Length: 519
Image 1 (tube, rainbow, N blue to C red):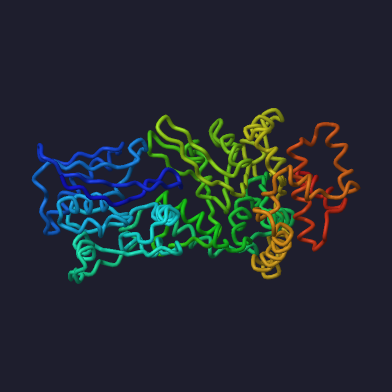
Image 2 (cartoon, rainbow, N blue to C red):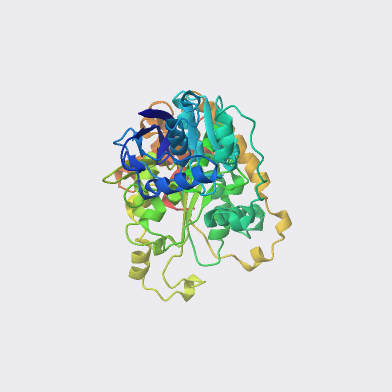
């Protein structure tokens, strides 16, 4: 009996696990038998691998082939195991040296003609390989730029099974036709839509918004401290325009955050083909008809995918027309708003996705959406029920609440060349974040909004005199214990924007007004 081993990576969420792929050839009915909890796509690998080996000029063993994926108790899915399975089978058939493939990690899907196609989730898979001690990873040529983001790992890109076998046999690579340049028609629909949305947002500027000085100020505070925002106001007052321009105020992602964001988008299959590393904060704006699974992630069985909350990690999750979302959909965000991650449990597996985002809600004050308050025909009870669709526990987690007013005729005629641009405001945001970074230098947190409540009270508590303004709201129930922490976090952000060393009564009072929506 011949036995050969190689390795692949199984992903569950953004977490990976090294999988040992073993192939054994024994006497018996000819065929390929996969064991180790493969899903449907992986079970179909037997047909892809067989055709690819034949079309690469190799011989398929005319005996029974058993391929084991260890650990056997862990569910495995996807077509990224094709490459490892094919090499293990050829190694067991003594077509390639067994020792040449034993220490390699291989990630790729095989076409019937033997070409190696790129797969999603390569970045977290290579990170897993590096953490396990692997020094060489074989990937498709289309995944090389993404895989090369991981340091201290040799990444080898191959275009076909024939070329990989030549490499393992220490032979010159075969001549192969050049691959056709990829265009938009060959990319995933989500990839194309993401690229178009990113290009559109690149043209946005805060100076385009007419009036709304309060909304601009709230946006600047949110960008400086990573605080959640809720805008209410009549249609056409600028809620959506302000929200779409929030990313233009944010600094670029640092290396660690960029890798986190890129790994999530890689798993989701939304990583732009021409952008292996996402360096700008992502912006997600799901429609109000989105389901709970679309918002926080989900899927049937072992196929668990990230939702908009995780795709917005280290960026913005904008929920326009918030009261129109289905019952319970918005409340599903309460856990990630507190913990910074989404944990999805299924009977066969549990997946974890990071989800530390800035949430921005926008809502009309009533269902009739009259352009002017005086034209509204809704009864007060109807207005209350409409806004109550955004539950109290959810709004309790929102740091900044602001009711925007109608834009006046004078503001509509205002010369936009005199308005502050995103570039000007972004400079102040960057300066404030630098002050925050220095204060939090010896902590794992990046912004004021991330500081846990216990550390906020122990290490970053404002002076008692400044907090005295919060005694009455706490006593009469207007301010909850969670709200107290959020007010203090906003007070620190206001302090950083003003270049002060510690919050005073002015910053605490202003932060309280922003939390209560009195601006």
